[in-house]
Structures are given as structure tokens and as C-alpha cells.
Image (tube, rainbow, N blue to C red; front, side, top):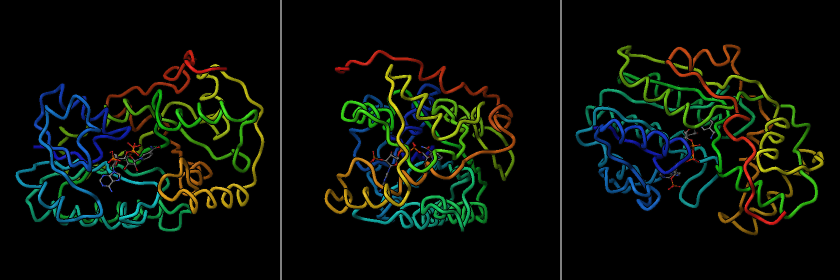
Length: 298
Ligand SMILES: NC(=O)c1ccc[n+]([C@@H]2O[C@H](COP(=O)([O-])OP(=O)(O)OC[C@H]3O[C@@H](n4cnc5c(N)ncnc54)[C@H](OP(=O)(O)O)[C@@H]3O)[C@@H](O)[C@H]2O)c1
């Protein structure tokens, strides 16, 4: 039995699709099973929350492999970024050890470190250390920016372009990424499952290095739109978004902790080699997003 967390997310959806297609027995730890769509009748369900450790302890019964994808780039009412990504992973690893799980698969971000400028990648560094130090067989995949057609970023951008004649670019937009399609990352994750090494670590990146500004341009072109970019200094963007967070609380469409992730590079010198070593030839972002016809008013 595979326990999959984060099955309703960008990467989790693609992983679940592949596990179900391969007829592998799956249990999904979810807050709300409706997010699983049609797959919810094909998997075992364990209701749980990263902020509620007893819930995922129960979900581990009879599990051979945990694929831990659940994460949050923003604070939630029940837990901070540090609790949901760092401490929860620590608790999940401990629960897996106690339950006799064999392998723990964890997805981190390229460049995670205890001194990273973003809270998420500091918490991911702590989580990576816990996973790597555990007694289990472990797999860590450190990914660059992950995307998919019509992902949350694309939906937000579509709304922004409808509302604004210019495109706000935070800072200089110079941070570098090697965007990887969620489907390619999912293929990488599946490819690691049947490898025997007790300790695996893979840096997973797409085939091209793009600045944050170039990523935004690819996304805008995919929506068949054009907009003049306007640089917004980081302190101004942070202050503005924090005002929105104070007013809208968890309903804010985007918060500074999420935007800040686009100001720090996530690259590896090895480029796409990590994915290729797992038998995956990652696609280029413009080829995946392509220009799509917008269904909304120009
Ligand atoms: N996206 C990227 O650019 C990127 C880059 C590098 C690494 N990663 C890592 O890759 C993994 C998958 O990322 P993703 O992009 O697929 O994330 P995502 O789309 O934001 O999905 C997050 C998943 O975590 C679940 N989740 C959030 N808070 C939870 C909580 N309190 N309790 C239980 N489940 C919770 C969500 O479930 P709900 O449906 O209940 O919200 C959702 O299934 C994450 O570990 C992420 O940090 C992502």
C-alpha cells in the first residue's frame, strides 16, 4: 500500500493518476476527498491534516511506501509554514518509522537551506534533514519551479490580466528557474519507486533556465496576451501583499510568502540530467503551456 499525501495538488494529481493507471494500491491522506475528483472511488481515503499528527499516524497502517507531497507555501489557520512543512514532515517520518513503513519519498525545492531567504525553503531544509537522517529507505527529489497548464499561477495571472493594464514584476525578476512540468516530475517520482538504493537523492529540473521575468512572459504568451511589465520594488510588494493578508486573512488570493519564492533562484548546474537519469525527458515550458485561446473577454 502506498500512502500519498497532497494528492489533490498540482504534483499529487499527476502522481495519483499514474498510480491508479498502474493499478497500485493507494491510500490518500486528504483534508477533503472531493478534491480527488473521479479518483476518490478508486483509492482508500484517510481524512487528515498536516496540523493534526494523530490523523496521519492512523493513515500509516499497512503502508509500505509514503509519498509525502502535502505542503503549504502560506500560513494556514491551523499551522504556520514552519509547522506544516518542517515539523509535520518530522512527525510523519516518525509515524512512518513506528508503523514499519519501508520507504519515505519526499519532494523538496532546489536550493533549500537553513539560511534561505524564504520561510518555505528554510522549513524544507529542516524536513530534508529529518528525512535523510531517518532509519527508513528514503528518496528526496529537490525540484525547481513546477507548473502545468491552467495551474493556480496561470489562473491568477488570467484574472490579473483582466484587471490590470500592466504586469507587476516583483524586484528585477532576475531570479532563475528551470521549470519542470508537474507531469514530468510525477514520472520522475514513479520512476524512483522501483529503484533499490536505500538512499536516493535527485535534483529535478526542466531543460531550460529562465528568469522569473521570462517565466512570466511565457505564461502571458500562453494566454495570448501582451502586457508591459512594471517593476515593483520588493519592499513595496511585500507591504502591499501584507495589507491584503491582514484584510482578507486566509482568503487572500496571493500572499508575500508565495511571491517571495519567485525572488530566489531554484536551479541546478546539472539541468535536466537528474530527470533524464530517471528515464524522463522533461518538456520545455513554452511547449507545454503553448498559446491557449482565452475564453474570457480581452
Ligand atoms: N509547485 C512548485 O513550484 C514546487 C517546487 C518545488 C517543490 N515543490 C513541492 O512539491 C510538493 C507538491 O507541490 P504542489 O505544487 O503539488 O503543491 P500544491 O499544488 O500547493 O498542493 C498542496 C497539497 O498539499 C495539501 N495540503 C495543504 N495543506 C494541507 C494540510 N494542512 N493538511 C493536509 N494536506 C494539505 C493540499 O490539499 P488541499 O486540497 O486540502 O488544499 C494539496 O493536495 C510540495 O511538497 C511542494 O513543496 C513544489
